[in-house]
Amino acid sequence: MHWRRRCGLALGLLWAALCPDPLLAADLADLSQILRELGTTATVLHVGAHPDDEDNVLLAYLARQRGVRTVYLSLTRGEGGQNSIGGETGPALGLLRTLELLGAREVDGAEQTFGACYDFGFSHSAEE
Image 1 (cartoon, rainbow, N blue to C red):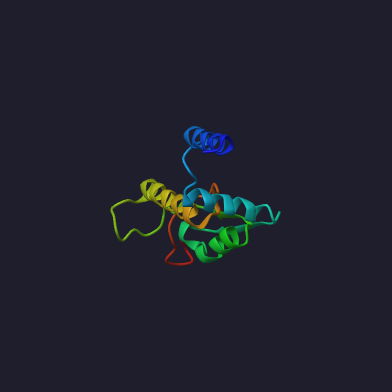
Image 2: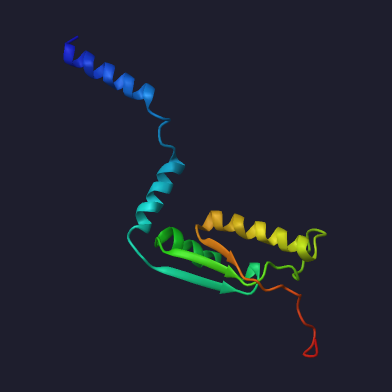
Protein backbone atom coordinates (compact mmCIF):
# COMPACT_ATOMS: atom_id res chain seq x y z
CA MET A 1 0.00 0.00 0.00
CA HIS A 2 1.27 3.43 -0.90
CA TRP A 3 2.41 5.62 2.02
CA ARG A 4 -0.23 8.29 1.23
CA ARG A 5 -3.01 5.75 1.51
CA ARG A 6 -1.57 4.46 4.76
CA CYS A 7 -1.42 8.00 6.16
CA GLY A 8 -4.97 8.67 5.00
CA LEU A 9 -6.21 5.43 6.53
CA ALA A 10 -4.35 6.16 9.78
CA LEU A 11 -5.80 9.68 9.95
CA GLY A 12 -9.29 8.33 9.24
CA LEU A 13 -9.01 5.75 12.01
CA LEU A 14 -7.63 8.35 14.40
CA TRP A 15 -10.47 10.72 13.52
CA ALA A 16 -13.07 7.98 14.08
CA ALA A 17 -11.52 7.06 17.43
CA LEU A 18 -11.35 10.62 18.75
CA CYS A 19 -14.64 12.01 17.46
CA PRO A 20 -17.85 11.81 19.48
CA ASP A 21 -20.61 9.45 18.46
CA PRO A 22 -21.98 9.97 14.98
CA LEU A 23 -24.92 12.33 14.64
CA LEU A 24 -28.20 10.69 15.46
CA ALA A 25 -31.38 11.40 13.53
CA ALA A 26 -32.63 13.53 16.46
CA ASP A 27 -29.47 15.63 16.31
CA LEU A 28 -29.99 16.19 12.60
CA ALA A 29 -33.61 17.18 13.21
CA ASP A 30 -32.51 19.65 15.89
CA LEU A 31 -29.89 21.08 13.55
CA SER A 32 -32.47 21.38 10.78
CA GLN A 33 -34.81 23.23 13.16
CA ILE A 34 -32.07 25.65 14.21
CA LEU A 35 -31.26 26.43 10.59
CA ARG A 36 -34.96 26.97 9.83
CA GLU A 37 -35.24 29.42 12.73
CA LEU A 38 -32.33 31.45 11.38
CA GLY A 39 -34.49 32.38 8.39
CA THR A 40 -36.93 34.56 10.34
CA THR A 41 -37.10 37.01 13.22
CA ALA A 42 -40.86 36.61 13.63
CA THR A 43 -42.42 35.87 17.02
CA VAL A 44 -46.02 34.82 17.64
CA LEU A 45 -47.70 35.00 21.06
CA HIS A 46 -50.76 32.74 21.35
CA VAL A 47 -52.84 33.53 24.45
CA GLY A 48 -55.42 31.33 26.16
CA ALA A 49 -57.22 31.43 29.49
CA HIS A 50 -56.67 27.76 30.32
CA PRO A 51 -54.14 25.02 29.57
CA ASP A 52 -56.40 23.31 27.03
CA ASP A 53 -57.20 26.46 25.03
CA GLU A 54 -54.13 26.30 22.78
CA ASP A 55 -54.20 25.38 19.11
CA ASN A 56 -51.51 22.70 18.99
CA VAL A 57 -51.65 22.35 15.21
CA LEU A 58 -51.04 26.08 14.76
CA LEU A 59 -48.24 26.10 17.33
CA ALA A 60 -46.50 23.14 15.67
CA TYR A 61 -46.90 24.61 12.18
CA LEU A 62 -45.45 27.97 13.16
CA ALA A 63 -42.62 26.59 15.28
CA ARG A 64 -41.64 23.45 13.37
CA GLN A 65 -42.55 24.24 9.77
CA ARG A 66 -42.06 28.00 9.58
CA GLY A 67 -39.27 28.40 12.13
CA VAL A 68 -41.16 31.16 13.93
CA ARG A 69 -40.49 31.72 17.62
CA THR A 70 -43.87 30.68 19.00
CA VAL A 71 -44.99 31.20 22.59
CA TYR A 72 -48.18 29.99 24.29
CA LEU A 73 -49.26 32.08 27.27
CA SER A 74 -51.80 30.30 29.46
CA LEU A 75 -53.23 32.90 31.82
CA THR A 76 -53.99 30.19 34.40
CA ARG A 77 -52.62 26.75 35.17
CA GLY A 78 -56.05 25.10 35.06
CA GLU A 79 -56.58 24.70 38.80
CA GLY A 80 -60.34 25.09 38.48
CA GLY A 81 -60.82 22.76 35.54
CA GLN A 82 -62.54 19.41 35.30
CA ASN A 83 -60.65 16.16 35.83
CA SER A 84 -62.45 13.08 34.57
CA ILE A 85 -59.45 10.72 34.68
CA GLY A 86 -58.03 11.29 38.17
CA GLY A 87 -58.66 12.65 41.64
CA GLU A 88 -56.52 15.78 41.38
CA THR A 89 -58.26 19.09 42.08
CA GLY A 90 -57.15 22.64 42.86
CA PRO A 91 -53.38 23.19 43.00
CA ALA A 92 -52.64 19.49 42.34
CA LEU A 93 -54.67 19.68 39.14
CA GLY A 94 -52.86 22.91 38.23
CA LEU A 95 -49.53 21.11 38.61
CA LEU A 96 -50.74 18.21 36.45
CA ARG A 97 -51.95 20.59 33.72
CA THR A 98 -48.66 22.52 33.91
CA LEU A 99 -46.70 19.32 33.29
CA GLU A 100 -49.03 18.40 30.42
CA LEU A 101 -48.44 21.79 28.78
CA LEU A 102 -44.68 21.54 29.16
CA GLY A 103 -44.79 18.10 27.56
CA ALA A 104 -46.90 19.40 24.68
CA ARG A 105 -44.40 22.18 24.04
CA GLU A 106 -41.63 19.58 23.76
CA VAL A 107 -43.62 18.03 20.92
CA ASP A 108 -44.86 21.12 19.05
CA GLY A 109 -41.68 23.18 19.50
CA ALA A 110 -43.33 26.25 21.01
CA GLU A 111 -42.33 27.93 24.27
CA GLN A 112 -44.62 27.90 27.31
CA THR A 113 -45.31 30.75 29.73
CA PHE A 114 -47.95 31.25 32.39
CA GLY A 115 -49.87 34.23 33.70
CA ALA A 116 -50.45 34.98 37.36
CA CYS A 117 -54.22 34.40 37.30
CA TYR A 118 -55.85 31.71 39.45
CA ASP A 119 -58.42 29.50 37.75
CA PHE A 120 -61.39 29.53 40.12
CA GLY A 121 -63.53 27.26 37.96
CA PHE A 122 -66.45 28.02 35.76
CA SER A 123 -69.56 30.01 36.67
CA HIS A 124 -73.00 28.46 36.60
CA SER A 125 -74.81 31.82 36.61
CA ALA A 126 -74.17 35.56 36.25
CA GLU A 127 -74.42 36.02 40.04
CA GLU A 128 -71.33 33.91 40.60
